[in-house]
Amino acid sequence: MAKAKVQYVCSACGSVQMKWMGKCPDCGEWNTLEEVVVPAVDAKRSSRRGPAGTGQGAEPVALRDVPPGAGERVTLNNQELNRVLGGGIVPGSVVLVGGDPGIGKSTLLLQMAAEVAHGGRAALYVSAEESAHQIARRAARLGIAEDELYVLAEIVTERILERIESMQPALVIVDSVQAIYAEGGPSAAGSVSQVRDSAALLLRTAKAHNIPVFLVGHVTKDGSIAGPRILEHMVDVVLQLEGERFHAYRLLRSVKNRFGSTNEVGIFEMGERGMEEVRNPSEMFLAERLPNAAGSAIAVSMEGTRPLLVEVQALSSHSAFSQPRRTANGVDFNRLLLLTAVLGKRLGLNLSDQDVFVNVVGGMHISEPAADLSIALAILSSYRNTPIAADLAVVGEVGLSGELRSVGQLARRLNEAAKLGFGRAIVPRSALRRGGADIAPDGMEVIGVRTLREALDAALAS
Ligand code: TYD
Ligand code: MG
Image 1 (cartoon, rainbow, N blue to C red):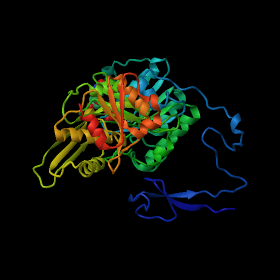
Image 2 (image 1 turned 45 degrees about the vertical axis):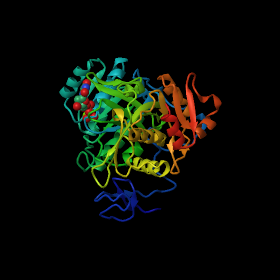
Image 3 (image 1 turned 60 degrees about the horizontal axis):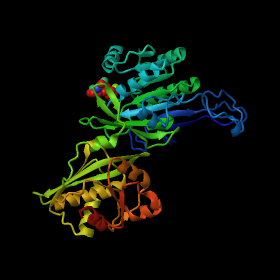
Image 4 (image 1 turned 180 degrees about the vertical axis):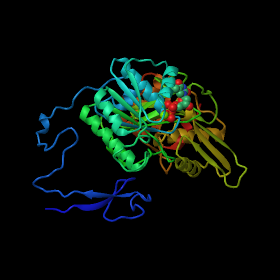
């Protein structure tokens, strides 16, 4: 018979060490290694169990005989939420929602709970941070008064579980997972092992009773969800609510989704009545655009499966410093450096005495290389003080030799641009070849170019 052994598990990254150390060699965190006694496993009389809900001593069954799942998704009226969830709320799923403080997590989830309650199903909002009165005030402000919406101000995980089990609601929100603690555990609320233990308990209940549970998670300074990384592995879906404090737009991104595609984005606007869906985000992002202003280019970026038209602005102005400045807002800083270097080397643009500022309008952040061309053209347009035609949209990744590289999903991008009234588009020629001859939407002229120089000639010709 095997002997019980002792291991040390890092509560921050989940790595397993054979001996105790002050600093985790994997993630570099201090004092995170915790002793875990691994029980002896007798191969013949294994006491290990299958996943929660399967009972003990599960037998292997033919996969084709397993029913694909209990229950249907709860489809919401809120299209943006549906989109990021992959088509609605999956029963028994556990969803982690992260985001900076004040970004609107509580508001969005209260609205979602109200929607479920509106359909006559019980929704339980567990508030561990705010009092029931505060939640009621927020609800009043949002015009929420559903009969089936319940609030529970509770911080002890075991008591929350009891309520869930006796009430059997159709949806549970726990706001937040950092604020609750399991009485069974030794550490204080908010500590990494507490967060993990509480989440594990909630997870088991969700699976056992087939109840979807949404956990609000705090975010650390560097933008990751606070607490153990392992939390993100445990849950089914991880959503990130992003945006800037001074902009009304909020993006809900799906970072992980076991039931749908990731990188889907839901777009909301924080207004007087909470988080409102934005059905035509491109229109909104382009609303304040000045036609024929130098230093502005329209990029067609993909956010998940949705094409989004955004305005990229650049300003190049004579620098008062020996070391000219580069400022990137909404685009990757290193990408900006790379593009200014390519503009200098391949197009002979002398930016060495120019400060260059780049900004994506509306607080959007585009990380796709397909936006390269718009950034480069915006800088060129500002440098030459020549506007880019107002009906032109551009897509393309710029390579180090100044060549334009192909981008994915070109047809979708072009259709969206055509829908918003853009008459011309500059795209990489290679993408055009790949996409086929009929890729251009009706009424749109699609110009395929091979290099940044050709793109420049086509964009500033008019
Ligand atoms: P909240 O949902 O409390 O954020 P989080 O839970 O992510 O910390 O939202 C906080 C901000 O949203 C707060 O500054 C007020 C603002 N707000 C609105 O602008 N409109 C509204 O209808 C509501 C309820 C909040
Ligand atoms: Mg909150």
